[in-house]
Image 1 (spheres, rainbow, N blue to C red):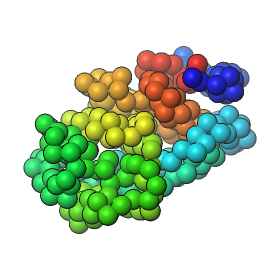
Image 2: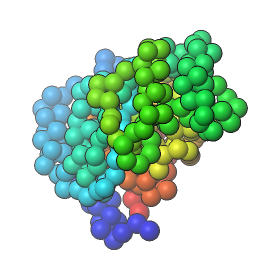
Image 3: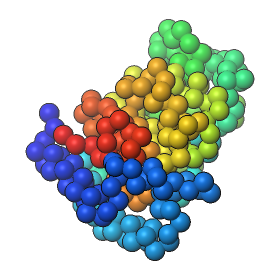
Image 4: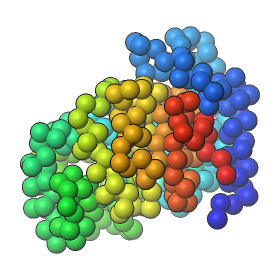
Length: 286
């Protein structure tokens, strides 16, 4: 059951967004997407500075404690940008989470042309993992193996490290900071580029990762929910409703939205939040 405190946090987040004049859920961000970049500030550096400053003062208080005692691993898609991932990690930590590690999924991994190779790496490194051997789809097996490597409780065991090493050696995954402990929550970060065929690989992988974890979130910048974007593709796919999504990661307030969305997903309440292209509005509410 969602606590009264969490209800207040969610409602407060809505009013902060409205008071800023951002009107996240009524079209401002969607209408101000620049064709030159991923941001939603319409090229006005003064407005961007104001929003960043205000969010820096308010978001930590809004998310405080919402991910207390949670462990999170962050995985990035090839087009994800450090300027969005770095502050997201900081916000997750401000919410009380322990970020166990940060890894990058390679373009080789999510290119369906390499499906057989990725599947063989997963199968050979996880021969005794039932979720891998029982999966009927190649990328479900890949996702199940990846999940076995990073999801769980306590220290990662030999099996987890073996799978991770195989993925790294196969250039399917690289670690900025490899976790020593497993995580119960997973955040996958998309970039602003077009998804191409990557969505067909990511969808089954997300499903497998979500099945193994307490919750999984896909978060990206506003452009990721435009036609051709990865968030848009996942929202329109067979896994829609199973995986929570956020499409405002290119704003300071959006990192708070992503954090609140992950907390809601951890409470078994998935949804899509962010711009007016998001089915559930601007900010998670109880």
